[in-house]
Image (cartoon, rainbow, N blue to C red):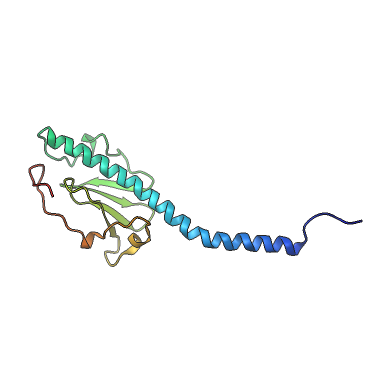
Length: 149
């Protein structure tokens, strides 16, 4: 009588192939997930910029009070802690060692700053190529009256 089924060797080969595929795919998967987390911050920062621009259009100065902006989260998300500066917005990652910074509402560009302050840190691990804040400069602005870049 012949039994139908898999031998132990066949099962081991399948498990080894699945393990090998998981080892290859897993690092790339984490990069993609972290990049999508960074996109969350990018969307919030862009919405804050748009709202601050509207304030300027209405002859109001930029606000540093998060409660005055509809687009600013009332609480930190599970991924980022947000804070307003005089001329921009900062999103510090709660899951990795990097911070995304919009130095200027008028310019609107976003740069990445490693928590250790040296080198690229985790910024180099993101799929999106944010410029490093140490090499990213925008003209100083004092508020809505500053010239646009």
